[in-house]
Length: 208
Image (cartoon, rainbow, N blue to C red):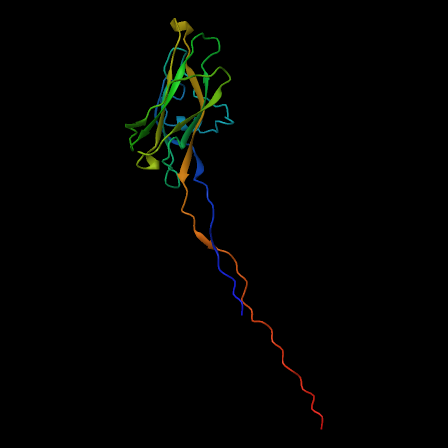
């Protein structure tokens, strides 16, 4: 009888899985037409790659709008590799007629009350109308729980005289959450059922 060997294979899995998270709460929203409401996140929860056109618009060219948004928790443990997480945002200048070049920055906060600064971002020039997407990478190694992630966006007005200054509007934002992949599970390959070698029996003719 012949037996075939059983072979174990480790299935290859990606280093991390990507989940898109949208903001599910507004902590702060000031100096814009989403100001004073707890629902700015509902205006900004579009896909930055194809925004819906419902903006949070600055109150004027001479203000510094600020947004603090909470995000839903990722389903799995966060990948804590360097710059494994991303925030994508679609922004535009307030008015193409202004001469200043406004900037914005994205800061990541931790804690249930969004009080602890986790990672501060650089100032980025606001794109000209009709706007553009910006993707900022960050590292989650010190984030205690995915449910506690908050993102603060601050627009900085810029320019000469008050009438010439520029600031920014925001259309959409999302968190591209990278989650740690599960440990691969050994999987057995199918094997043939062992079979016995066929045998033959002699046939005898009896002559009387």
